[in-house]
Length: 142
Image (cartoon, rainbow, N blue to C red; front, side, top):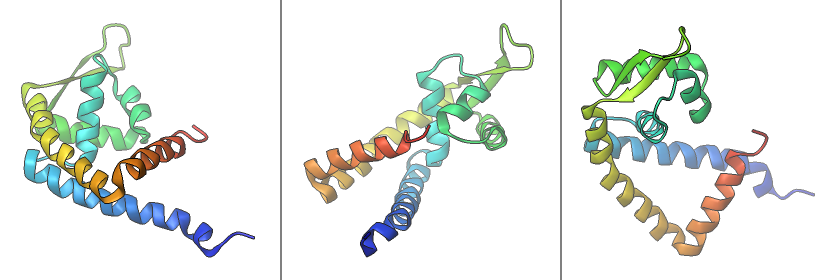
């Protein structure tokens, strides 16, 4: 028979994710003027040169419409540029601007501090275990 805590796991995961996202967003906005969602998109574009919007949607696990809006905000802010894909006439390639690269640099130290605080909260073993378990959950049924 499942315990009471087993029934609450999904709720606790949602609550933890919400709390972490709010805290990280506040810090990213203060340090670099971007949200964690925008930060994730910028990292993906940096890590995968020639990335298309469709590939970005898959990488971030978002619907195409959400990525279109996200890319629009990043382009309007001067952090990304879109250019024609060399082989696919309907696709666009995303590239970081100098301002996008600077935003990533500005957010980095704050994210390092954030991760250090979570490591302090959970301890080294707890941090490693949480990371491993969340990685499994993030890729479960994908």
